[in-house]
Length: 233
Image 1 (cartoon, rainbow, N blue to C red):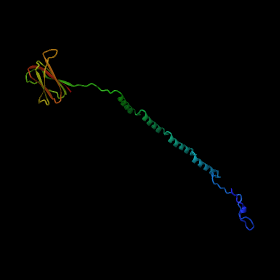
Image 2 (cartoon, one colour):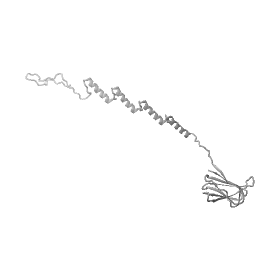
Image 3 (cartoon, rainbow, N blue to C red):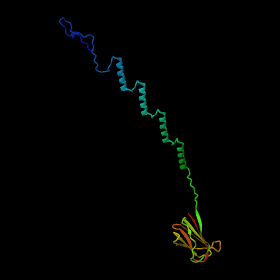
Image 4 (cartoon, one colour):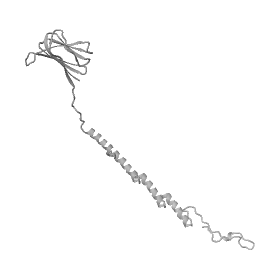
């Protein structure tokens, strides 16, 4: 505080000072805290200082609550207040971490069938239907050398067996045709007596039907012959 004495002021002709400064002080603040006489303003300045140096608080409870929610959303688990949306999020999590369930009962049944088919036993029917036929080439026919039997169409079958019973063991030739008109020698068979004995010689020949349309026999000796073709698809 600096006080200026009135005796230092200039005087007039009567010796009275031209101006007097009484009880006045000049406050010099070189450093320290700014003080404001207005209590309201001082309070505002204090609030500003607190806001800058501490935690930001909002007097409005609604606004403060929103700030708290933002903090929680960043640092904690995201929650959805809408119960329907929250339920959807929960369902997605369950689907990724657990078993997939389908609300549609028909679709769920299909999924169950697939699981059963994969985990269960695959059943396959083992029964096979065989379609075969038997056709006579000669029925107790009296043959002579160079004679031919009737022809049999076997074009509908893939496997064929010619069987022959003859009164002699002379050779009998098997011929086949690709068209029922032109004939080609296939092989000869000679009958043997059955192991149980008897007077009839037996022979057979089997082959795949690659290009065969018809089969017939050619005899090389006089005999009584019964012959036929057994075929299957």
